[in-house]
Length: 348
Image 1 (cartoon, rainbow, N blue to C red):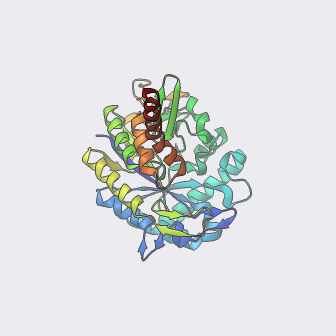
Image 2 (image 1 turned 135 degrees about the vertical axis):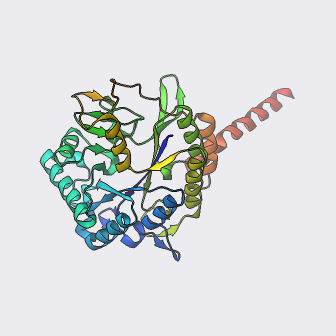
Image 3 (image 1 turned 135 degrees about the horizontal axis):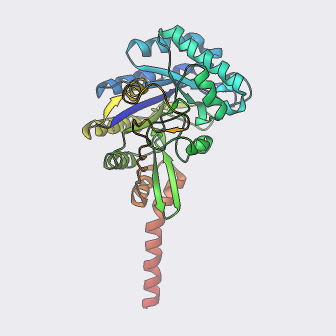
């Protein structure tokens, strides 16, 4: 049975150095409701599962009391808490690769120690802010006792350098570190031309989600991992000064979770998935590539392909929000109309 990994980057956000309200970006307290971390837990539990929250602990420099309370609440409900790193809270360098290996190790140790102090549970996994990691990050993770990273998404530029080390659509392991890649899919594949997309909940439509889930089943992918944020059910203006609940996003999330359940995906957490991998394939790994297969490297399933028709339908679905999507949606009917006019002119 394929697994469904509901992962949430839980992060109090900043905009041009200005911290945004914690009660909005983390808790989603708007319009008389609560649409953040707690609501995502509610929706995950409604399909019989738990979510994994990658907690941006470094924001404790501004929100330590709030983060401690949030962590305790997540752990108290049995959900999974792991490490998320946005070093922009520390200084003027925004991503992990901008720090030395020693600096990264110190940041990771700080995050792991805080989560353990706040919840009584030691984290085992990490996801980098902006999905930006380098070789120093991978080494620092293991030196900190974190043996799983989930920062790799095929085709996503900040982590593209991991493509030569880890597999694209299943867990793999190199030098003892497990990489659990985010799910990606190919929106268009024409020969050598391919447009890869990350399964970021806020960047895909309901049409794309349904196609992706069905493709994942057809390809027998071991899991599908969705990326959400603590503010995924909110809409905000460009200046991040105005926020409101987005009922369309909630409806899309409900539809996605219901469809995944109906198709037979079993919800699990990153911690539990890691535990099952190690139970099946062993705690240790040989140097070099290790796809966590007992009898040697196993073939990596190909990435799902949704295709141009789904891409067009998705543009239609997004047209009311996005000028670019409107152009894509209007292009075929406009071209058809132009063709008809040309034919009418020449037929006179």
